[in-house]
Amino acid sequence: MMKLKSSIRDYEVHFEHDAGFLASLAARPQRCFAIDQNVWRLYSDTLLAGIDPADVFLLQAEEERKSLDTVLELYNFLLTRSARRNITLISIGGGITQDVTGFVASTLYRGINWIFVPTTLLAQADSCIGSKTSLNYLHFKNTIGTFYPPSDVFIYIPFLNTLEDPYFMSGLGEIVKLAIIGGEKAAEEMIELLPGALQRSQ
Image (tube, rainbow, N blue to C red; front, side, top):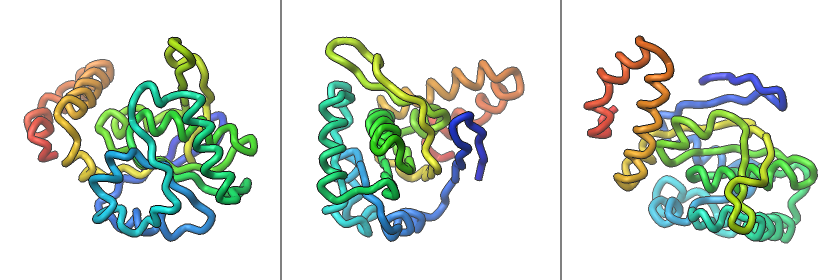
């Protein structure tokens, strides 16, 4: 577990080796889920089987859905389920899911608790660290947003087993870039680990 400091609030990143944490999240009181619909399609009968479909807002992970219209849909989903200030919004998906749910969490009731479970390599390696949320408006990209970190991030590597190759390579490219920026030691470690990473074995 890694503790991160933020001017808004501190938060924790958990590295999970057992899928049991998902059942624990599903059993939490006063919670709803926003889940990438592709992740739900792949895992609703297995890893996510403990989550009641009635508590799930399904989100298309497409750039055009990173919009105020989607935010309003999620507001409506939560409020029609009598969401109050003490609700926890649990987000499961990649960067687009993170942007939409993070924005909703930061603005509903002037801020509700939220938890992020990243399922793409790019989200696990990069975007889950930090507190930025971004939405598109008309044809302007990432023009609306807030800074609002989740209370907890849960990283579970087996989600990457079903990640399509282009998205996996995009995330791996970001990791390589960060390793190069990180200096000689980080770059050397990346070179050593890269063959296994390409095979998704580590």
